[in-house]
Image (cartoon, rainbow over all chains, first blue to last red; front, side, top):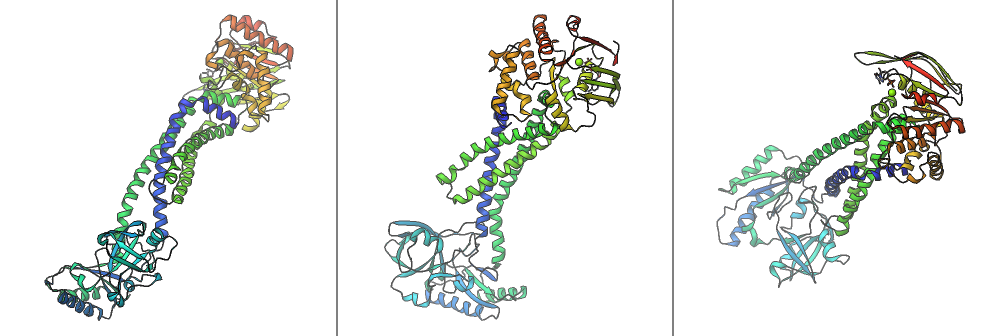
Length: 394
Length: 221
Ligand SMILES: Nc1ncnc2c1ncn2[C@@H]1O[C@H](COP(=O)(O)OP(=O)(O)O)[C@@H](O)[C@H]1O
Ligand SMILES: [Mg+2]
């Protein structure tokens, strides 16, 4: 029977071409959606790498006008002591603009031997690690002795370690940043990857550079780890404390929990839009398929009547029609998969091969299901055609 | 071989009721060649469909080969048709997307048989209707008479005991019609196949063993 159906399909290749193309295109669209979904899901499943839940960020405008670095440092040190002395504050750290979920980035090239990687650069204080509970995997975090170190220290994340050093131990190795090619900096530690760009975004290679006391004029954010019992009234109190100290400065307090939601929303929007577009397409294709199968069955009433007359039961007629659709689906899926596997083979978008493979498998299942469901009803309908009536019509 | 007792067939649509057959009693012996005649719409096709188990009567009993066939399931009926009956239609009902050989093989697909056996039997059947040289053609490349011969080959490929032919020569000119008729007569004579044929042609009806006339759903002769 299988051979018979194949002959039938082959001899009708012109009519079937349209149907196959339609299934093929839907496969590719579904494949794109699933690739993105699987990729997002995979990123979502990787650990966050930091503890952001009781961390607030205070954004301020630098209102202390002075050319004197020392007095500026003094000004902010006092602020630090004032805030830190509040009982609900556990730790505090000044930070560059690109703190977690901030949607701002600061990048540079980092060179080790002959290889170079584009990296995120985070300018941080020693206390940054404790505010965000960053885990040190190798070597150590910054400490006060680094202020007088011969080579400026740098800390890298796991992703950067893998890309730049592979299996080598990076601790103690000398590297250079693009912006200051002559000065070597020394890797002193490796920290766990942190998804600072949101749950769904892959962690980029990252490096941490220690802020020195001369950099306060370029900062505008304070990360504060507060105790879990801190509430809205404390937030008001904190706000007042800081704004009393920094007259003429615009102060804004945000929670990293909310910043995370915002940034996730940003990556979800394109996903949602794509899914809606794909959803419409799938519905269209489903109706198209359904229509074509329906039309074919009505065009083939004579054939169906004849098959019934010569020994096909109603059920075997519907099995035949559903099988024909499934064979057509198989043909389009073979062609579709051939194109889809080019993505991991040619590494088109720098996604892991596993993401593509999973997406291909899911899309194949999806298309099979779609075609099966779309042909089930027309197939059933065909089974209920009265042979005497169908044979009478021509 | 075939026995119809008090067969009645009523077609009901939302607006009208048609009495297509009215108390038909008929016994057809094994090896008999019966022709059925009557004006258009008198119920000839309906009678053949009921004998062919393609349609159920509203009333009455059908026995074929001493088997009562009123209460068989859809699947059992299909199997019965496949083994015992061969059909020939006025409009051939060939599948245009299949080659002649594949068309003839069709009934064997619904039995247990190997591809080789199917090809063998189909070639033999095509030989009997004189079309061994058209095996690889598509139906659209054949004349009407040739198409009907393919349909006959398809009807006999499964070696059925009964052939039901509904105006098999209705679409053919007299030369081609005679060819087809000769094949049926030969089949009846040499293989003892029981044949029921609907026809409009008195001349052809005369060549058969017995003639049944229908008028308005009732048997008149
Ligand atoms: N499926 C059907 N539904 C309603 N009426 C039908 C159907 N099939 C046949 N008839 C009616 O039954 C009568 C007999 O039809 P048919 O057996 O096809 O006649 P014939 O073959 O002698 O020309 C006709 O009046 C026809 O209109
Ligand atoms: Mg008729």
